[in-house]
Length: 149
Image (cartoon, rainbow, N blue to C red; front, side, top):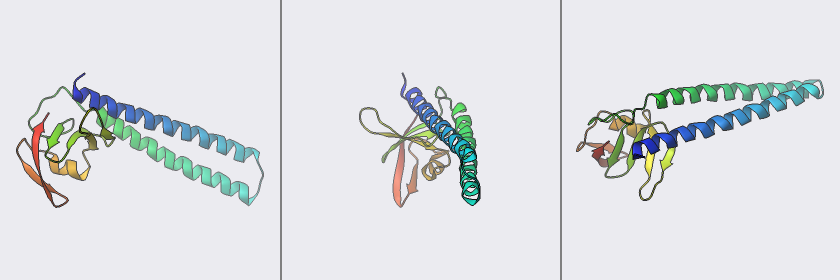
C-alpha cells in the first residue's frame, strides 16, 4: 500500500473511532435521561434533565463537526499528483512531514512521524500553494519544502 493510501486509511480510522466514541456518549446520555425520567420529581430532577439536555446539544454539535471532517476526507484524492501543495498533499519539510487532510495526529511507521493536519491548521495555511524548494517562516523558524507528493 502506498504511503498516501495508508495515511488516508489512518485518517478514516481516526474518524471511525471518534464516531464510535460519540455514539457511545449518546447512548450513555440517553440512558441518563431515561433514568432521570424514572427518578424523583422536583428541582433536582429538572436540573438533572437540563444538564443531560445540554450535554446532548454539545454532542449534536460534535456530530455535525464530524460530518464536516468526513466531507473533507471524501474530497482527498491520494492518486492525484501535483507540484503545488493542497488538500491530500504529502509534504516533507526540513522540520517535519505533513499530510494535509484532517487533524488526526501523528502517523508513525518506521522512522519519522507524519503529521496529519487539516487545511485550517496554521502550518497548513502557510504550506498551501507552495512548491518544492520554497521556504516559509513558522513560529519564528525558517522551513523549506523538500518534497511534495
